Image 1 (tube, rainbow, N blue to C red):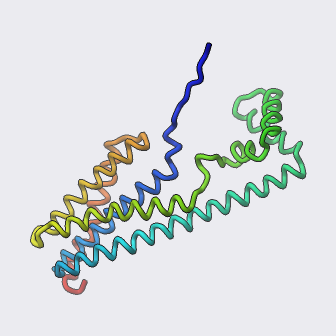
Image 2: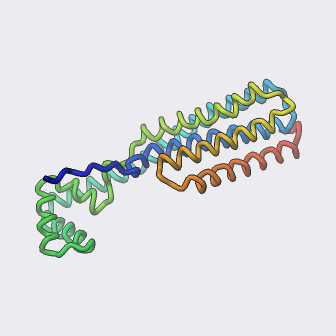
Image 3: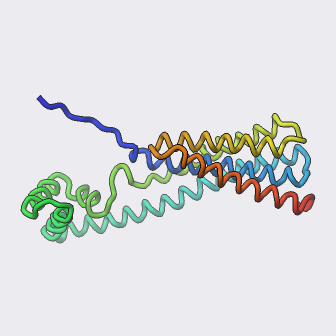
Length: 231
């Protein structure tokens, strides 16, 4: 007697994982870069901490708003396509059935069998069959604006909190170095976690996030040194 083989695929995590990694990475890099740039301009301790907190709040709100707007646009497009598909199924079901069969034929199924498959799937849920196989919309990939917005805001805030913590615990003379090194460590950890969660190459993901983080902080530190008190 055969038993069903249950699998869990990593692609099911793509919605929240993308928003979480992007938010945390942006939180660390932008806040650390802001702090390093301002600290390099020899601003006082309280001003540096205030800048970091302001960056956290503004960044989290910006990430949430940006994700909500962009993913909502995707959701609107999906709904428009589904509405159009629903109308076509109601007005020309035979053409839609043949269209679905041709999709399966292109994937390697013999035409007569493809027509049988299309017929059975459309009897069960015609719109779901066309959404999945014609439009590429599924439960895994469907847009979720609120989930993306909340995940991004929370991840950004968490990432930004680490550089701010370094401001609190570091002596002023070591602030730039401490924040920079600690932030690169945080980015490396994020790279490892994100790669493991998404099944990606750990070394490549880690090097990618740490390199661009170091580049951003070096640029802002240079600008802070260049303009000094003007910042």
